[in-house]
Amino acid sequence: MSGKLQNDLIGQEFGSLTVLHRSNDSGNGKKPVVKWDCRCECGSLVSVKSDSLLSGHTHSCGCKKIKHGYSNKERLYQTWKNMKRRCNDPTNKRYSHYGGRGITVCSEWESDYSTFRQWAMMSGYDDVLTIDRINVDGGYSPANCRWVDAKTQANNVSRNRVFEYNGKKLTMAELADLLKLSYPTLQHRVENGWSMERIAATPQRGMEQCN
Picture 1 (cartoon, rainbow, N blue to C red):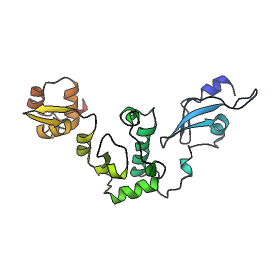
Picture 2 (tube, rainbow, N blue to C red):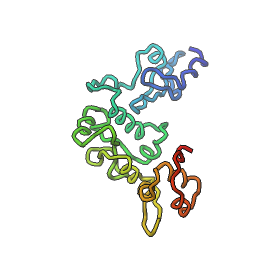
Picture 3 (cartoon, helix red, strand yellow):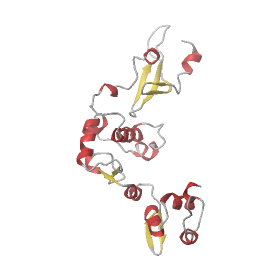
Picture 4 (cartoon, rainbow, N blue to C red):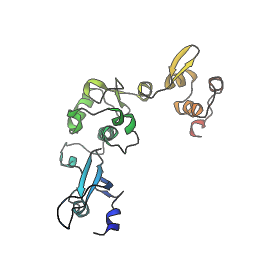
């Protein structure tokens, strides 16, 4: 395999694996074994040989060998995958808020979707709800997780901003509700430097949150 072809693997997808960069070669003698660090769609990182990727022999970190008996397309399965990505994958755009500050997935959920799914169904899961950590500094586990609507989730995030309005301290979601503004509209106004007086005095326009 030529050097150019080897470099071309970066960014390519092989089944559930996406090649991140070349890892340290292994093997002895004049023919080193070329390996690549890959991210699996479940969030795990794995080092795989070039020939295993190109032949199709290896197409996941091994998670595909786990037969949980449920569709990988169901929303709850995607929730499970995204939860693990946030905690395990440094390339995930939300990693700094999760794995980057020590948030982990408990061992019983980490490798077993069936266990996570069983907990979810017994804990009030619905397709309109999202998973929420009760203690925002704690990990994902049965004792620290619940299913909530978007408003409750917004009030519980660790990076939530607190505003003072009419002598009360309110989260952005609470302030939006009080002012009868949509959350995206209020967020847009805050990010554009509007004063609290202007925000409160200006009614929401029809498509303002899309600007």
